[in-house]
Length: 112
Length: 115
Image (cartoon, rainbow over all chains, first blue to last red):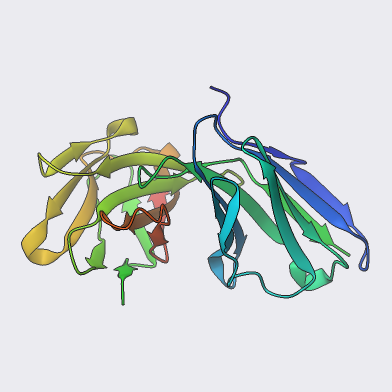
């Protein structure tokens, strides 16, 4: 298995632009999680899905953030419009039940 | 409330010395327990996990962890640290029942290795 695949690895965008981060979970995993990591706040859970259905989006910071999981093999996290304070590393992780996460390599987002 | 605590924010050890990273959890019942490592610029990698059974768990890269129910602890150990072990280490827990899939992470411990 190729693991959890995230794209792009790096994204630099200008303030106000739309940003879309992508994630392909491990086949057969029924949970998908989106995290954000910064030096100041550490790891923050943004949203997670179970069987493609959003379960808890209370960590999504603002309406500018949205996430979708149209099928079991793909999820997106969109920021529109982006702001400099959104600069962070965004991780996707998937799991089967409570078996623990497998993380992707992350997307480093820089908004200038 | 359920929580995971890593009391040490930063630890420095000499190469070749032994290592112990502390982790305490607060749950109604014993949760599933995990240790992850994050090297600079990388994602989090699973080192080991405890579900049940033998309280001493072996993981990758020569790490082990011991579950102690009486102390609500799951400390990570390594007998001899290598310079490549310098990284951030996260302890995490998930409830056994309820099957939410969601892990609760500790704040992380940054390990620095002196030559």
